[in-house]
Length: 51
Image (cartoon, rainbow, N blue to C red):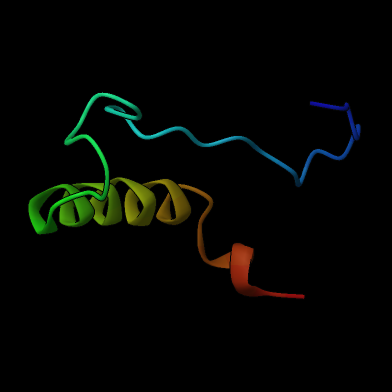
């Protein structure tokens, strides 16, 4: 991956990326990923949504 040197660009990886159900994820895995992603976005605070 190329470096962009922008502090607003971050990388997020799910805790079980590549280790869940082979093929398409199941509903429980989708829900787990959604919780992780929501927590990650919330960690930036309200200013994330301001321009």
